[in-house]
Every structure is written in C-alpha cells, then in structure tokens.
Image 1 (tube, rainbow, N blue to C red):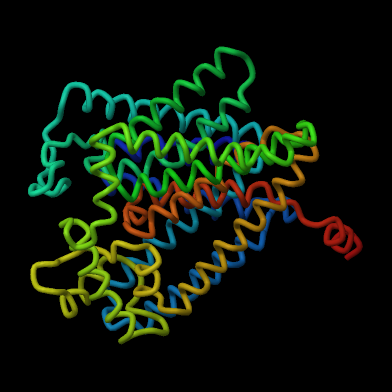
Image 2 (image 1 turned 90 degrees about the vertical axis):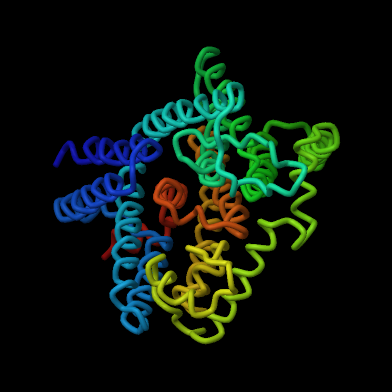
Length: 423
C-alpha cells in the first residue's frame, strides 16, 4: 500500500469531482468505495501512521448515539437507512482526515476542487446573464421579487447551490495567499470573484447569512494571521478597521441595490413572507416532535423524518426536513445527540485554533487552508440554522471535508508524544 495515499486522494477527488453533476446514487457508490478503501488502508497501516484525534473520538461517539437512536426508533427500518448514509459520510471523514495530512496532497486536492467549483459557478453566472426558467416555489409570487432570477447551476436548487459554494468562497480567498506566482494568484482572485458573485446571485437568504458569517470569521482570522508582521498600531486596530470596512460594504450594497435590499428586507417581515411562514410552521411541528421524544429522537435520516412528521404537520405544510440543522439533529438523535454534535463543533474549532497558532508561529502557509476551513464551518452552521441543504450529499460531503481538514492538521502535544515513546 505504498500508493495508499495517492489512491485515496483519487477516490475522494472522484467524489467531489462528480458530486455537482450526477445524482445521489452514483455519489453513494463512490462513498461506499471510499469506505472500503479506508478499511483496507487502516488494516495495512503501520500503527504509527494512524492518527486518532479528539475530533475522531467525538465523531465515533456521535455515531454511537445515532446507532442507539436507530435501535430505539419507532420506525427502525427507515432509521436504519439514515444510519447507513451517516456511516458512509463518517467513513469518508476518516479517509479524508487520513489522506489530507500530507501537505502536498492537501494542496493538490483543494486546487482540483476549486477548479470543479469554478465550472459550476461559471454556469451559474451564465444563467444570470442569459436567463433561466425557475421554479415558482423559489420566489414568493405575491412579492415584489416575483420576477427575480435565482441561479442554480448544475445543482437544480439555488439554496443548495449557495450551500455548495460557501466552502469554495473561503478556499479561493485562501488560495490567493497560498499559491505562489502572479498567475496562480490571479486565478485565485478570479475564482473568488466568480464564486462569491454566483453565491450572491442565488438570492438564498440562508446562503447570504452563511456568507456574511463566513466572511467576518475569515477576515478576523486572516488579520490575526497577518498581524504577526504588523506594526503595533495595526496590530491593535487591524481587526476593528477590517470588520468595520466589511460591514460598511455590506450596508452600502444593501442600500444601493434594489433587488438585494428587497431580499434582505424579506428576512425581517416574519410570516408576511411565504417562505418565512412555511419555515415557522414546520419548526413549530418539529418542536412538538422533539418534546415527544426528547432523549434519543426518532432516529437518523430523512426517511424516518418523513414517517413521523405527517403526524405533527400543520395542514398544507408538508416538509422533507426540519429546515434547521440544529432542530434536525435534535429530532433525529434527541438532546443527547445534539449535545454531542455541539461538543464536536466546539472541539473542532478549538483544535483548529490551537493548530492555527502553531502554524502562524512557523509561518507555514498551509495554515491559510485551516483558516478557510474554520470560517466555512462557521458559515455552514449559520446557513444551517435556517435550512437543511446541509443534508444533501453535495453539501454534507463538504461539511465533513472541512472537519477533516481541521483534523488533518492535528499534532499531539509534546508531552503525549514523549509518554508514547517511553511506552
């Protein structure tokens, strides 16, 4: 298995290369292949090559809670299907965390992924410029935005496209700093402009919320990274000035672009907007589901949700998910599962911050990929607070990619290494 890492990189590249263009069935087949290869690679690995991080521990704990939720589910067969899907995603995480430890493979893979996303974004911009027939359910027909064009590219849904583009926006910004030479940096700038423009033109309000959270997090971390070379004045004021400038640009854009202003305003009108009203009715029903099964929920997966939700739904408000990642996790795995997931989130961000400090001291530019991953995790959770495109394979694989990127930078403490060597 001396070619184990390159072969693993090829497999995960196939997953992300095909994801925006094919159906979920083929993605599932590729995930099964990745799972099998991870098992083979782990069995053949030297024990010293096996990296088990605190993130891995919590991922395993979360899987164990999902397993218990499946065993106690009122719809066990449907929950078992969801557990199998979750298992495939988690095994993909294990493979990526193992393969992406190599800086060279990490950089090559991210470069490949950004080129795939560039194709998706360019097609999205083409839809904006030349027009495209959109579903009537994407825009409230009674609002002033009834004729609004929302791009969806190859993914078929503007909200899904927005969630798909969030990681690319952060990684393309990081690429401008990591890639060497004017031509690669110009390519990174082009990717950033195209990806960000395409995301904005989805007119996905949840995507915009995630994008704002991502950009603010990215700005703070980038300024922290660069401040090591700043004068004392800029070390003190760089972050406030940078955040203030981003806020000013955002406010100016909202005030001067009518379509943007109307779309943002619709976030705050409550039930007067049909999309808001729909979500509020779904959330009310989901909260009742959680109250009835608060400990371990109904079991993982949309199949289990679709079996139970009709018993609680308001008339005319059918839904395939909870339209909130937090509520979805709570309804699937209960308060125990939600607590474990939030714990995983905190530990992942904490480990990312620790490794970012280490890489900053070493002036290692690989830390910029870590910054992008941390910012994306924040952005995807902000988006996920009001939507569940997070559960579609095109986006869920990206979520676990970001967690795997953070895990791939893990370095055990010196004291732990010394103790291990002594044993």
